[in-house]
Image 1 (cartoon, rainbow, N blue to C red):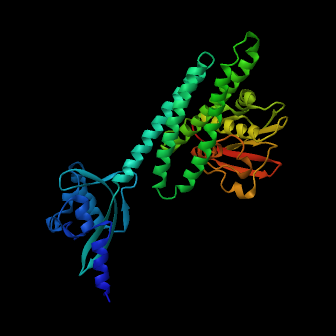
Image 2 (cartoon, helix red, strand yellow):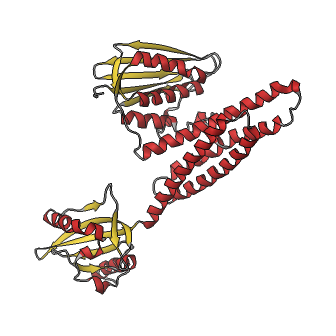
Image 3 (cartoon, helix red, strand yellow):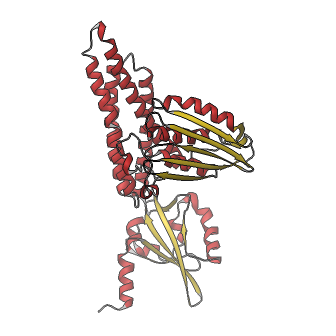
Length: 412
């Protein structure tokens, strides 16, 4: 039967994390085999050496001060939040690390334990995901260009769209593989794969079939048929473009590239202008009814509010039947204003409402309706940027009311 001491020694020797023990003067007392494998040293080479030996030269001159500060106020902590940490290998090269510190006292002497994790693979995945984001941005640009030239080059653009689909599917597979290897992302990956397989293939199938049929309508009296298929292709490419715009917006938010720019404007005029702009989103017979209460001057980020409003109105029209009324209401009070968007659509179950603001989530009764599952997630992220809150009330087959509350006490 192994003693407790034997168990601890075995844990130390077989731990997959690197473990370094230093004394009160910052000299290395013990290292485990994981450190030797990680940094290329033999254990004996490090004993009694200052821990700064393992710090890259560009960081070493600051490390002595930070170490002394820790020794004055020791505590268990994770190191490197919001910045990258590196260790120096025996051959002089750097290795990215995740570091956590612990400490104890023995015979009135302070000892510090550093736990090291090699995150080279994680950094590789992050670099791969950034590369995929850039590829998506490039593909989005290509699709927008194709949309502008569509009527003159239908057959040529169809071929390019097929190539774009292949690249997107390849990126999807690579992204899914990366997400598989990161904890707590399996659910997001599943939703993304489900959405992309439907939302990308459906419009592209329409483009391919309509492009093939166009070649058959060669008679002068068949222009109406040609126009009908050209319109289908336009709508499909626009849908693809909307999907990619959602991805790009999410990417910018995740990378903290969205900045708030506050300015003063008339909320009532802004709402009326937006209501006019969204008429192109309405189904036959649908109409927007708008009402305002209170004063109309506000100070906030006008562009972000417009993004929020367009997403909410787009959802309202999408999930409502033809002839339905879309209700808009704004109200300004001291220190804040609110915007409400109400529809008469299919509604959302209480169970699904718990997940509505998650990325790529689609409610059970909306799976057959086009969408990425990013709309409300983006709305929530934009509202958070503005320091606001969002409320949602919905009943199945009766409709949904989404209300946002935004503070207006910022300086323009």
